Image 1 (cartoon, rainbow, N blue to C red):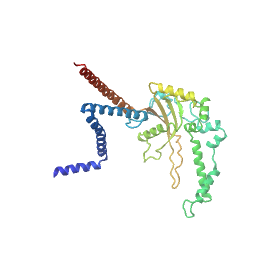
Image 2 (tube, helix red, strand yellow):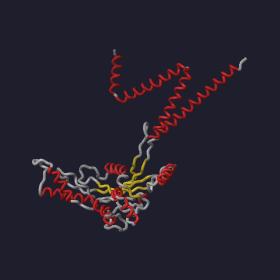
Image 3 (spheres, one colour):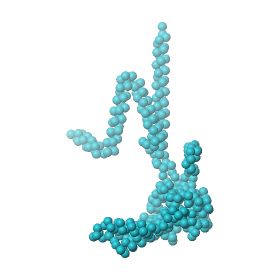
Image 4 (cartoon, rainbow, N blue to C red):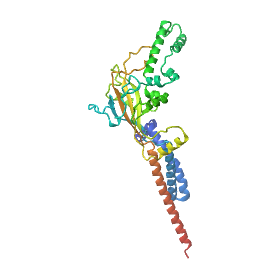
Length: 378
């Protein structure tokens, strides 16, 4: 009776454990699928030959399946590519004589994150809005450096007209004008806080012209768009929150930061244009490179000013605190081993498949030799 209860208890535990139950289902299904085929082949060809044929078929199928895994990045997968933080530097990374906080050598030619008072100043970066005002056309200046108070007023009126008369959110008269003024001020903050990385993603011709004129002295670095550096920005933000820099602490009034610009260096060469010859040549060059050049990205952030939240209103746009230094986060791309497990399984299964085929071929030669020897006997 005790054995029966113990077995029932074990079966009940397995039925509620999804991991163990799933493993048993896979093993049982594999045993039934492959075992039934092996049983049929063995009854027709004999135990040894049937087993060898079944093993050859299993390894051949496994090799093809693992090859598809490796080609399409599915099935058994390894570590995915990630951005790894290599160093954090506070202040101007191009100043190499800072003994208290020496920057890595790779940051020597990174531009000074200090903002210039006007475009063309040396040893600093111009503000993106200044580049727009000097190089942008009329449509770009309207897009980046204008505030349409009339459109804001129409949106605010339409929103409050849709509210019921007794709704506490409903405004009128001076209240609507105050709301329009607040929205205009927030839009002005967004215009002034436009970063060069954001500008390159929207109007790359402006940043390219600024580089050509020498306003952006980047050395070996490339200005990267915010969209392209999104994964690196996320990795840097997570690291800064976990680091002992006061970010993310609930007892701090100013515990957040604003992402400024991102710079990239290394990696495989990018296409210069979308022409057919450029696409083909770039594909051939990058595919024949024996190793992947190390890819670096620098994400620069600065602590934001604290703003008291207002009940019933969306959070105000973050503004950098000019008294705080710029923090440069150096990240390196770790390509991981995403397809390595599939490749190893394909190679191992392929070798075992060839060995089993060689054994089958050797057996056929031996059978043929014996048959021919019996036929030649007197």
